[in-house]
Image 1 (tube, rainbow over the protein chains, first blue to last red):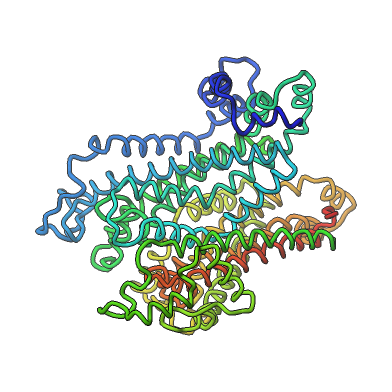
Image 2: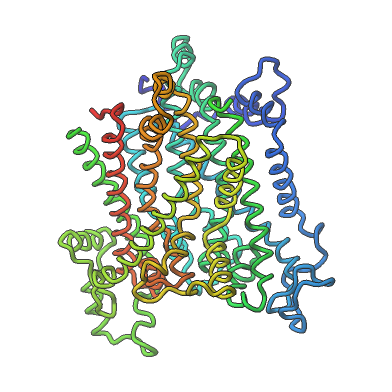
Length: 326
Length: 308
């Protein structure tokens, strides 16, 4: 690893950028199209395995449904999530409102449907952020080694040492103090920021250890012997080969983040009331649990189903990608 | 080994300072007047503001404040709240309850998780195995606050076999359900970790040798298989104790346990920055020390691992 060339690792020169993007693109798109190339790669193999798993299809079906609900909530309900009429306050489930009405007389079914968007948006963006940031830092740390690795690992340790819920509360309170009226998008952005800040070290460690293992592999040595630059080795060889563990982690992470977002909203530091989300609904319902248990039940059921689908998908992907389990 | 311990301890120092600096900066940089609402409806008298500003070095830049704070902390002085109460007193009152809760949780997690993991790891693909796999998936998917609420409502309010809230001194018997809730997610991890570890090791050469030389099943499993398979599980349990204490804030809120999580939440809401920093520092310290301990334990338990 000579220093002059490895400098390009941190600041990639712009002209090379399109080439790199084009190189990595087939890897990302490799899952659905893997059949095209005859000798299957790791991802192709995984896809071949996945297709035979009922667990995969069930969870994928649920996830598609949730994504559809999040993208087009008006297809699933004609009601409005925020208009309520007090005459229907705390009316139980019935023919007019399938899931009943809350204290404001708002339709719980519409709210559950519209609540999917905030939860899934936050979870997916936070996962993308975590994987990109953690993955990037992990590749740099694993590839460079030496003092760069030591420094980056210690920085990761600093963030890793903060207890998750506590850290998120502190971050959200500091960046968005009580009473400061702020819009929905800003709060969502802050929740995403808090989640990414506290979890990226995990993605970084996973990536770093895979890179450390792959760096010694023959194909990397061969590539280097043939004069490949560091950038090429990283993007063409290391990243595609080290992607699997992070990929598995990220699927499970989406589920975990849906739960985390709900927890933060529940504690009153995440999304707040005019925003509709499952966590906000559960938090609102807690004082009325004795008179209106359905108010707690339906958002919780949606929340648990969503988390479960992503955890199951992660499970299926892990089994497909882990050669030990074949 | 001695050199390894030394190196780990040295690594701990920058991480400790980094984490506390980060928390300190986040907590104290909250925008707004720190004295707003501290003296009832009136504005605070100038003499009070002056006294407090001097006491907390509020006029200095944050890094300087942090150095002052650390200087006091290293002599065991956690400082005082704006009301003049010693923070070390708050911590020493609340901490035992949280520790008890975390220990109850850890015990439940270890007993249920290990039993489920061992049983399913030894007999894979049976009915029990699938049952445990499905139930761990559910445990992983249900956030703590949902399971806490449901259990509190069903067991505490509807059936009435537990107290819905825990009394002030938090006796162990009342902590069982909160402990279960707190540990539910980790329990699923322990079960799965144990199962995978046993399943992997039961195909290993040393187990085959032990069976081939005619050892009774009980000895093969009890001595050879379990001892080696439980190493990752024990390390997980070790790190989890720190994580449980940090994560207890939700459980403590639901069951109104007088613990550190509730104190820190109250402190955040009332902007008692010094209390927040103090409690987080303690939690971080425990977490880092548990991690160190686990790493050392790893070496002691697994003779294949040698730290040079």
